[in-house]
Length: 458
Image (cartoon, rainbow, N blue to C red; front, side, top):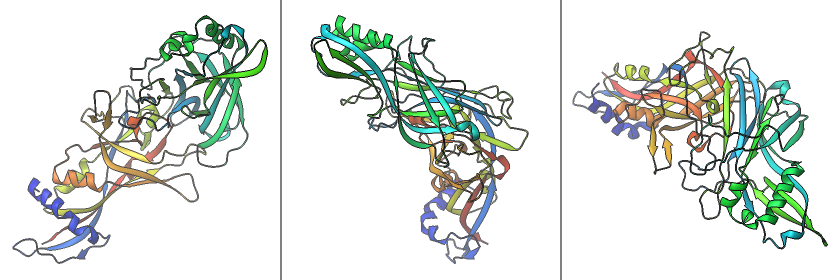
């Protein structure tokens, strides 16, 4: 089929959207001198898949890459661990600098330290089965080095922190009986008096430390949130919530009134530029799993068990090769794409390890890397198939289907206006940083492209 034939089909496509059906039927439209008849057809085309490990996953929550409105406040610090036989051992640590938001400082020479309190809003928990329940700990460590505001952080990045924690959160998950990882609670802990007294002493020595963000960052680098080894869950902390802050309490010698200084963990000030930066360091040990044979980034890998794996937050993607659709095109002289739908089955999963919903389809180049569009010198977006796949859970078992319409993308392949036929399956809005843990498994030979089209009956 010629490129002109395919473009003709794309131009005529909108006229026949209403004629898509699963059973062939005559439409009876004359389009050429030989009075050919259009019929509506439906085909399921198997899509070949492989597994790709991607090296650079954006983890920089402050920069809001690809979005003009950087005040959405959806950033999340992820801290925790879990392991299973499918993907291995997953670990995440959260790193953040802190911005001092304080009232006017009076006469600090009379201040007496009371306590330093850390409060966090938890809005996400992800874990597996019986390990989900029980007592958990998150340790608070002081950073040894600064988090650089104008740098871009990936999941592979880390910042050194002091070995001795300055505090810890202790919490208990006694019950959780839904598939949703969304929660809404607040944890509070008291940080070490040594650190609190250090803050108090600095106020007395130099009040400018707490009036200027740059000066404060020279004094205090920030914190790392590190889960205890026994934590078999990943906890998500809403970093930009008004309920997430460090608060210094003190009083004056001759006055019983208490004052509060807030050291907030937030991404942006009202003027719109970064005042703090936070990110998540994520690692995945694949030893002893079906995917442990992946040794090189961006290199196709296939398992021996007929399954394909997706763990977007850890950089494990399933790559879809739509070459079989291009081969299908060569068997038909004329066609008009009415609708194209991608279906990805989800294998059984354990409680509280539900797949991410929705998924995006990212366009990849021949090196198995995302195709990026630069929006500005610092912002970019990834090319996608302009569609999201929505998960429908089986009514009885923990499995289901991802289904999404990719008509525009397939029409572009059909007409030749799109030449990239490789797609990477991953969590939605991946360019906007990792704020969720996600994984699922699919049967690689059961991924299909459903095509509803019209063609000429000769």
